[in-house]
Amino acid sequence: MPSTVRPLPTGRSADLIELVQNLGQPRVLVVGDVMLDRYIWGDAERISQEAPVVLLRADKREEKLGGASSVATMLRALGARVGLAGVVGNDADAARVRQILTDLSIDHDGVIVDTQRPTTVKERYIGRAQHRHPQQMIRVDYETRLPVSGSVEEELGRAIAHQVRKADIVLISDYDKGVCTPGILASLIATARGLGLRVLADPIRGHDYRKYHGCSALTPNRLEAGLATGRCVQTTDDALQAAAQLQAQLDLEAGIVTLDKDGMALAHRDGRRLVFPTRPRQVYDITGAGDMVLSVLGMALAAGADYDAAIRLANVAGGLEVEKIGVATVTRDEILRDLLGVGPAGSHKIVDRAVLRHELDCRRRLGQRVAFTNGCFDVLHAGHVQYLEEARAQADVLVVGLNSDESVRALKGEGRPVNDVHARARVLAGLQAVDYVTIFSEPTPLGLIEVVRPDVLVKGADYRKDEVVGAAFVESYGGRVHLAEFRPGYSTTWLLQRLKAA
Image (tube, rainbow, N blue to C red):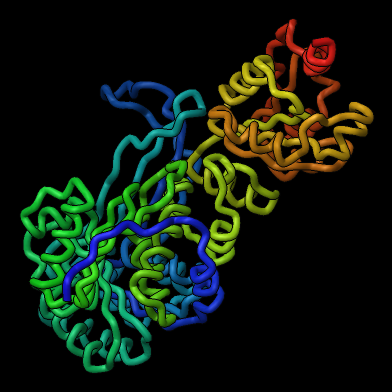
C-alpha cells in the first residue's frame, strides 16, 4: 500500500471528547524499572567551614514514585485499573514504594524482591538562594544497572505471566536498570500476543532494540530513535523514516517517534505515514512527558481507539503535563477542559480556585514562593504593567485576583468596567509577569487570599499596610506585605477622561 505523508489539524475535536468520555476503566499492566524519587529541599545559605562546598540547611523532604511506577501513577489518575511488575530491594525504600502503591490502589503483587540489589532511588538536593530561586544542586542515584540474576528473572517472569492474564494492554517502561532483560521481554511479548493483547514500549537510549521485537508499538523520542536507527532525526521527515525503519525491523504494528514541541510521527504497518503536530504550550518542565504519552496511548488503545486518535489524545495530555512543574499527573477532566476550551496562548492562566489550589500545591512542592495581588485592571496602562512586574519580582509565581464586573461596578459606579471580566482576564493573562488570573465576586479578596495563602501580599504604596485587606492573615503564618512603588501620572480614570475629551 502506498504511504501518505500529511500533517493533521490540531483544533478542538469532538471525536477526542467522545474518546475521553468513553475511556472506561481498562486494566493496564506496567512492566519495568520501579523507582523512588526523593527530593530534599533547603536554603543554600553559605559555604561550609569544613570544605569549599555549599551548605544546604534542609527543611523539607518529599518522596514520589518514578520510572515504571510513575507511569502506573499517571494511569491511576486517568482512571485505569493498574498492575505493576518489577523489582525492588529488601530495604526501607522498598517498603516506602509499596506503601505509596497501596495508597494509590495499584496492584503490586508483580513487584518482587531482589536481595542482591537496592531499590532504585534518585535523590535530588534542591537549594534555594535567599529563600527563593530553587535550583537542583546534585542528584544521588542508588541503583545497580546489572541485569537481574537468573533466579530473579524466573520469579519475575512467573509473576508477569500471572498478571498479564488479567490485563487489557501491557506497557513496558524501560529505564535500563536491568529489569527488562531480553528473556523477560521475549516471554512477555509472546504471552501477550497469544492472548491478543497489545504491548507498547518506551525504550532505552541505545543502539540495540532487538529485545523489543514483536511489540505492538514503540515510542522513542527523537534522540533515542536516532541512536537506534543510525539516523540524525531533526525534521519530521527524518522522524517518519526512523519510525518506518523501526516498524519494519522490529515487526511492530506502529513505530511512533515523539518530537517534543513538534508532536509525534507515526509509521503504521498498513502504510500510513503521519505527522501529528501539537499546539504551542507554555512549557514549564518537560520531565515526565514521555511517561504521560505512553500512559495515554495505552489507555486510549485499550479503550478501542485507533492509533490516530490515541496519538492525538496523547499529544494533548503530554502538552498539559509539560505545563506543570515536575512529574505531574493529568486527569480526564483536565483533558476535557482543554479540548472544550482550546484558546489563544495565555488562556491556560485563567483558572478557578480549585485548579489554582492544585497548581500552587505543585509549585510549592518545588520550593517556589507565591505572590498575590488584586484589582480591577479595567483599562490596562503602563502603570499597571510596571506594578505587576514589581509584584512578580517578589516571588517565583504571581497570582492576580481580578474583580468581577459586579464588584467593579460596586467600587467604581455605573459605566464601569469599560471591558468585561473575560476581556480583562485575557489581557492580564497575556502579560509575562502574570502566572495565574482568578476572578472573585466578593466585596474584598480576603476569601481568595485565604485560599492562595501567598508568601507575599502586594498592594500599591498609596495604601498603608494596616489598610491592606489580608495583611494580618498573611503575616500570621510568616508571610509578608510588599507595598509597590507608587508611580504618579498613571490613572485609568484620567485616561478615560482624556479619551472622552478626544
